Length: 431
Image (tube, rainbow, N blue to C red; front, side):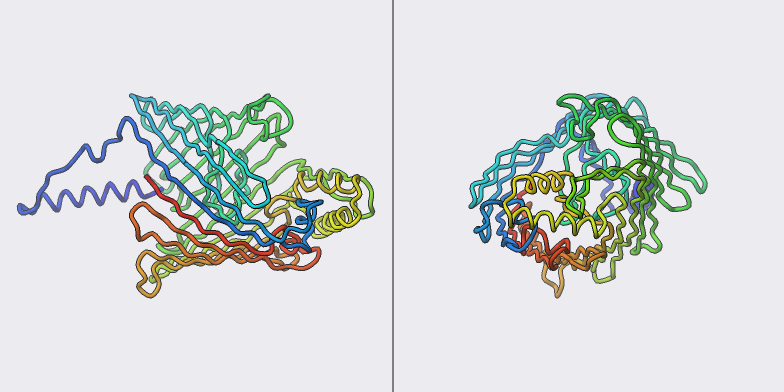
């Protein structure tokens, strides 16, 4: 958040130095820095994926039943992503969305059009903004997870930088700057309605939801306080922080308290599924370190109090195995219901470790960036490991190759996933 001040100071110093040197061309192209009234951009993407199924996994059996003979799947996906901005006076209209088509070997072709954002923003004065429409808020400082992301869709920790769809809302910002240890204060109120055909997946109960974030840049530390209350989700409170210990070493954290958090769990004794309601705490601690040789390390520890305990996960996996092995309609119905209620999400457990290491242009290989990511379920020791390499040596084109390997045994999270490993090749052309 200090970047604008630094940029302004450097710009002023640069012009002062140039003015003192008569040999320097002081011509300044103002138009190149002015915002254009209309901008449009985006990318075209093609991605091929191969999935090798984990035929011993509980989720493979549940997702594929009764077609249990398929060993893998090849999938081809094409995407057109567009971002557009229209400006006039104090008003800005912004939209972002994409059209995606997916074709695969097992006949589950899909075609989707998604509007990520569609927003009208009014800025009547410096530091004051009001917005209405669909917006993808990004609260929190974590890289793979955001426990304080109360009004946004969850990240996929396997690919956390991917675009996410927003919610329809009324929001805005009030920003003030000061001299002294507290340099910036910003307040962001949010109203999220839930009605038929509007934000239906935000919560089951219709009505209005109210959230707010208070941001402080104080003593060179970014701090946010958040709250959410209303009709569709239980009350929750959060705080996050980020601080640069040195110019290349940053630490961050998030903590959230969720009242009356409910989850549907499997009864290990064979009884009907039951709902557990309790207050929960989610938190995250992480760091980001950049070496002089452009090696970047991101490490995070995540505790998810709203997740399932190791025993609750084991009960679900046992139910899924029994349902598939017996073909019992009632057991399959129970297993599918609990999968859809939360067991089937990317990281459903309680405790995780995350590590990502990337090296920019190693061994003088221009435009190549290899990286590797590991996600570990700290309760059962199972993990996923994803090496990748990206090439950006062609103008506007990014090529990425990834391999994903999952390791774990019976009743362990990554040993019960649908896939054993996967390969991905992606070409993304920006315009």
